[in-house]
Image 1 (spheres, rainbow, N blue to C red):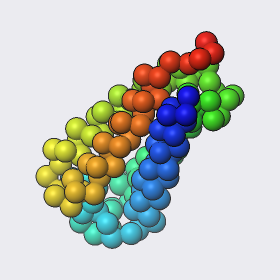
Image 2: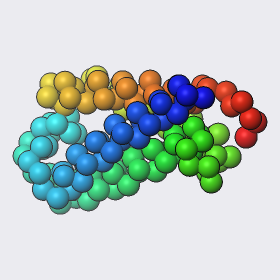
Image 3: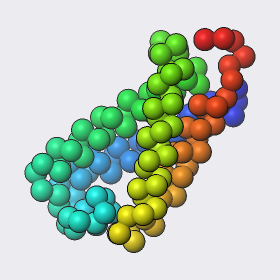
Length: 133
């Protein structure tokens, strides 16, 4: 249970960092080289800025699912039993995309983060409960 909660906290902490990055992009930070394969260096165009904000919201939801599955947010614990697999699949896809991105800057920064998100969500997803939820 300690490993599961530690992994969930790591996932949430990393997610907060990624959310902050996405919100910064949405607000016009000139970091496009580090996202979307580096296709839009500098500031994102308006549509992608909205997309970055939406992605931050999605990431918050994914983090809440992982925290719920670890028992840190108890209200969602039953739903999180199935939803955590969506988080795990999202983390898997994220790692793959960050490993194959044409942007070396994006790959250098986000592939290690994506790996840790996959590892921590996997620990939470594959951990069995002491109590049956």
